[in-house]
View 1 (cartoon, helix red, strand yellow):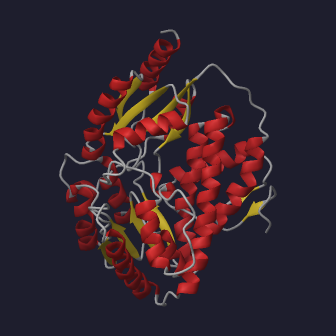
View 2 (cartoon, one colour):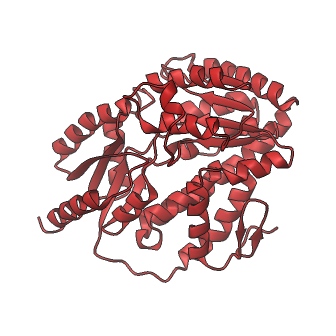
View 3 (cartoon, rainbow, N blue to C red):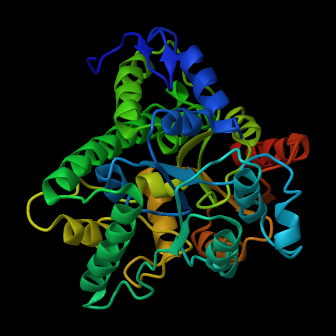
Length: 394
């Protein structure tokens, strides 16, 4: 099917290709559906699934093995079973991620977590004790500034590749991995196009709309996501919308647990969010990954050399305060929304550094917390509207 506006009818998505509002509604429903219908459909067709916890995972490797890589990012469910397996003072996303698996809503053949914090490090062990399939930890470099970081990460990717081959029941040839890399290179280019729209003409695409278009990439085959984005982009560019009196802001704090879409919509009613770190793992690599040469080494170098920044990566070349200020300048933002998930140690720690850097530059900012399962955003919306008025009329 051509990558142009037109009907998109597959086992995973049904869209006429005409009305953007229909696509946004479809994408939101899919993003918020805690029964993971696309995963069940994939497995019903004989496919296998690897679930990977936040933040970054080299999905190309799983794709090359014929598996569906699914981003495990929690859900808006009550963690009744998971509460019995964790302590009280943990972020919600850890518990709800396990809950959807325990309840059978998210069936997997392999789970991979990352030691981005103490809770995520322990998640793999807890997961492994509760399911018959393998649970692995992907150890991304703790010191990306080491001269040996790329070599180390290449070997870690090779170990992961062996695990995936064993689960998938097939070997991954370099030629097949290169084809998968081309698919994901295209996906990241399309996502960068969404980002350009938001920076250059933010009235054409609200933050909650861009979010759901991005999020479905972690739920459907990536080729299908590419087709959806390629069909949607021309319609967004020609959307009949006019600039309004809203301030331009950068949203920082959505790298792991995700805020409710209702909260993002509330923010969009008074602000143009011109850049953010929401689902940053899907956009971690900022340039095309070269396909010539050793594909695993190329993926490792891209992670280290051509990536964005995050609270969970400690790279001396990318001090987070300076990277945030650069993001604000690049997006021509007037202010920042500095937020973090409740009980998120990395996110809450960074708030202090971020606010000090913004104070030093005299940039206004709004500080808040969120939880993926929060049911009311009215109080935050009112506080944000007051903040916006202060910025506009200062």
